Length: 178
Image (cartoon, rainbow, N blue to C red; front, side):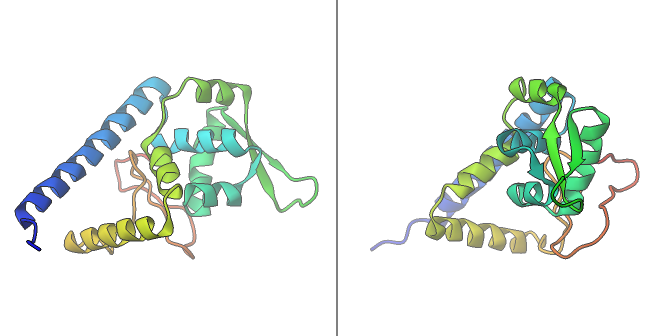
């Protein structure tokens, strides 16, 4: 069996990478134009809308983000009056997040965000296919010498803290958080 030409595969991979960056960039700009929020903020209110009221820790798990990262996003959403945080009546240590009327209205009129689409798409895959994507992206991160970089949320300067990390992430000077 003949080996497919590697230059053709490389070209197709490069085109797909370009397509992904193009879609993520365009969706991120559209979300911000239409809502005044960052992609991660809209993603959070969409997840809260689907599962709310939801515990902060559960929201972080559903978004595949560190709880402290989600806490920063929620701080900004609360300041805008889009969410409310309430202590559970059963366990005072638990904080539940729900949308305000303004938050529900925004969800109804906001476009889909790339992070939500990607997450739902990946969650729908079988483990075998997910494993192939995982290995491929992991290898790409190695090729780019990016394995040690802290992962920034799409469309923001905010960093997702590593599992076990403490404290809140802060952006580099002159940049704002999601």
